[in-house]
Image 1: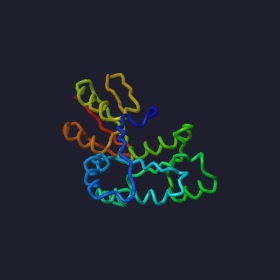
Image 2: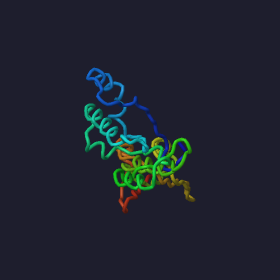
Image 3: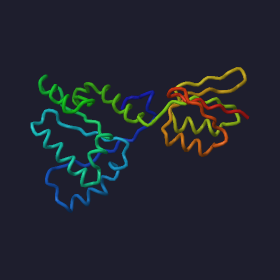
Image 4: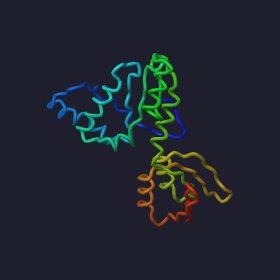
Length: 202
């Protein structure tokens, strides 16, 4: 995946292929194999846009995911639909699929077309549960600084004449909670729209 200023690191896990009329005993085997699916922040559902059985194939996938305990309300929040082989379909078919799968990515893996849109959708999904924070740190808080660089996406850094560093960092809510739990006496939070300013002193 191409480098992004908004995403620090992601792990992509490929799953086994799904087929229709999967035997019950294989469903049980799938449950351990597909544990990553239930824990994932988002799912890429890759469709063959040129398939005449696209809708039926999606039903097969959704049925198996439901049997794994991933239901439609969760899917609607987690899934990014990726329509591969979009270069093989007509303009009318593409328009039809765009109505079926709004905010999806129409790509061609063989010609590498339109991957930028897919990357943007992935970034949006990852950043959905994040906020931008501004921290002002003195040199004595090197451990806090290291935490921010390790667990956040540092978008800007500057030093003032007194040696304080101002950091603008994108953090997930869970990483901010861990930060606040680890350094509870240091944080004084003031909200201004979506930007939180935290000031640190010795």
